[in-house]
Image 1 (tube, rainbow, N blue to C red):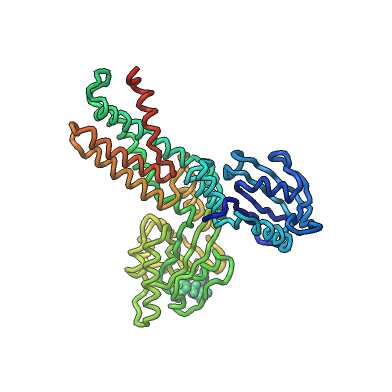
Image 2: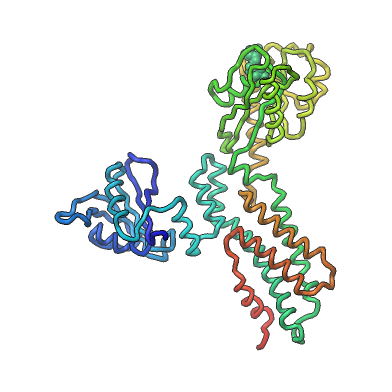
Length: 453
Ligand SMILES: Nc1nc2c(ncn2[C@@H]2O[C@H](COP(=O)(O)OP(=O)(O)OP(=O)(O)O)[C@@H](O)[C@H]2O)c(=O)[nH]1
Ligand SMILES: [Mg+2]
């Protein structure tokens, strides 16, 4: 059984200037009183000498610290919560932790347990709880903004809004089933709810066709550097990484494995991959590298195709086949290119080929700026909150499937069958926010129809 009162070090790794130990549960108040000698006024930072009250005689002072008292329900978890703002030394934290852990019914919190309790006490919905996790892990500005928005409840509110729309339609259908003899009820209730359901269906479809922007913002946008051997891919990769992460040499076929760096590109999390030069080769290891490069190309959100400006050859078929709308095509080594020598095939390739030189830096900043704008354009926050997890996507797809079943059915279908599809659709949305609650149905029925007045 889980302890009724949990505690944990909620701040970062010691030693540090301060450490925050959080305590939540029924014993939080009594423990604070014993440790600090008093219960301070709620939500007021109060200085106190923390005593090891368990010591038989002469209880020792653990620390001279600040304590905060958040009586339920006005706390993060919805339970009684105490925050100890200690001096952030290991021994200080250990002394308080040992004291707390020794109390019956008190135990160390499991990962996420404070947030879980907040959810169980209806302080936040599941998307908000997820948002808090994302906010804690946010590494770039765009991630922070998205997570903060989700924490604020914008995404959950959107889903709840749709779910309530579905529940309203369901209420009409249920009324049709339960009170079909009632003359006060309008006819054709199934038909009456169709327009509203069609609207919700369209909105969910649009929400799903989002280019996975929210998920990419969470996990990182994949950019792959691809092209023929010796073109300068690893050189460009090192330039982006701002260090010698990949080996550069004048031998074709230097890079074999996929090498990644994580970058903050203008606030967006980007995972850039350097790959093996694409060519047919009898070298088994290099051939495996080429396979991995092609695999990465297929997974990439954006590609930078690097062509060798020093070679007059047209790019090979493998490289050509990768060029699509998700590409930046660059002709590297502009410092030694004689434009007259660049093959006609190459120039015909795409109107978007730009010459750069990683060696001199020519055009590299422009490439980076344009890459940054492309990423911001594709993955920047929209006016409407976006889904951020596969979990959301799967549940929304299930919801759509149930709605689609409703619309596939004949116009004169029995209300019972129609109701079942709508109930399932609403449940799928409820799963996302964690609020599957059918009681609310009754309220809607009585408000809208005034049955039995
Ligand atoms: N003149 C000139 N040489 C460059 C430029 N960029 C890269 N090189 C040289 O081109 C050669 C190949 O560079 P790499 O970065 O290893 O090329 P790569 O595309 O990663 O090659 P593989 O890993 O073999 O596929 C090296 O000798 C680089 O110094 C450039 O802008 N100008
Ligand atoms: Mg390389």
